[in-house]
Length: 165
Image (cartoon, rainbow, N blue to C red; front, side):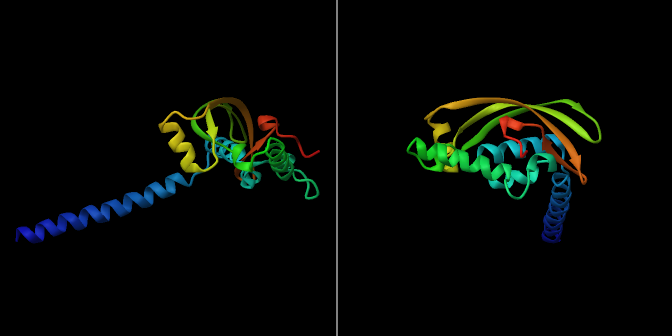
């Protein structure tokens, strides 16, 4: 009899864990202005072409001269001019603090402040942090975000990114 009660407790724990996991997944899917600002910043410093999906239509540029492609090419050229591969100009954010300066239903101003490290490979960044190898660079930026088609997008001139016009 005690064995059956023990099995029931385990089954109840597993069912409860699955239900909580579903709730956490849906809670994590909700897009926020702060989350978009952080995600854009991570993609920007990692030289990820996916950063384009975080840019507003005004900043994304036209199909002939995409802003993100021009930025990525400029960073690649800079790395090659210094005699390195692209990995030497990629950087990972290791710490970030955010502050919402202003927000309404259609726009937001988010201030980010943090530290970044060279990211030749994600493992390198982690190991370098553990053994205090390499330098940590501070960054600070205020991003303007607007809601387009129900999603938060970065506008203005984030991190000095040249505009598409």
